[in-house]
Amino acid sequence: MKSFVLAVAVLIAISVGASVVLNSGFQKTADQAFATTGARVGTAH
Image 1: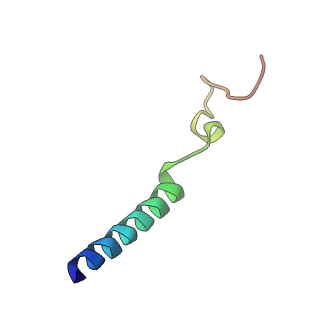
Image 2: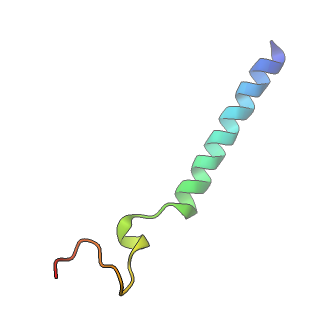
């Protein structure tokens, strides 16, 4: 039982850490990701 609780705690810690890392640097909005001269998102031409 102790190993199961430890595994659940480690799983929660890993998932929280991964969400913080992904939200801080890897995920961008569409306007930020495609802000080049080749693709303009949200502008009508």
